[in-house]
Image (tube, rainbow, N blue to C red; front, side, top):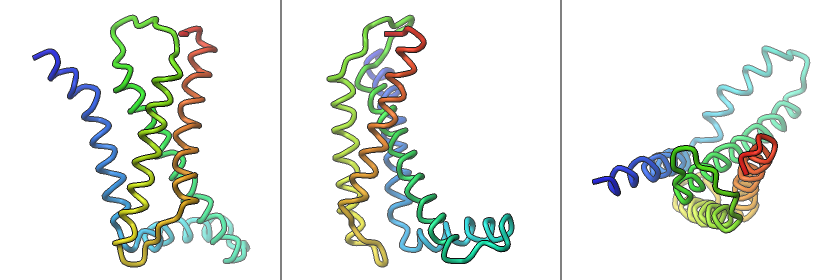
Length: 152
């Protein structure tokens, strides 16, 4: 029963987050939905900003969201792989981080493949690189915080 509890405790958040990424990725009007919220906000905040500039900011915003969502996926995967116990003082293990990053890469690649079948969506290798970079960034921030706080 303890193993099932640990399985749910550590892997269920990973699966839920992956399902959320998948559902957002399946939206054929994803760009229009985010533009409908983000671009009017920028027009309101900066009424003199040219529309072309707002579109650039929107694009950067969307890619930043990719970085963030895959950084969180990497952290959730790392946590599930590591399965820390109370007062865990084990040192940082790069193989655990590498396995989490490999999981991020594989999921990002499968997500882009999935987008081939969604109207108006495209699969891009550059998006896999951005997503994987987000995972790497998340893990590096975690490692750095652990070093600063002398956790490992």
